[in-house]
Length: 132
Ligand SMILES: [Zn+2]
Image (cartoon, rainbow, N blue to C red; front, side):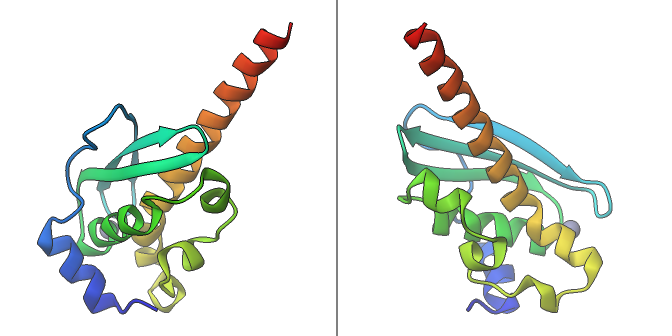
């Protein structure tokens, strides 16, 4: 399990900031309670997530959890990522935070889940079209 100190360290290190070197898709999200903004850049090949990077501004919890999300998602299967809860995927017990901070911690995770389900829907539709 990650400690909150590791997460704020990760935010300060700027590790995982930027974009993947390969072709990628992006999605942004905002946490209105805190003003955090995060954009995730995801490089996917079929069912495999090759690389995840982020950009954004906001509190250390939101930025650090986005960095941790990148670290923990890179190299994993899409199916694995979409079946994992935020606590398992991040390996961080975010429920120890105040409700206000939990929204910061979950921002990146929510963006990733939306993007992956969007990618799956697009792929299913194009598969159907090919079948017709
Ligand atoms: Zn925040």
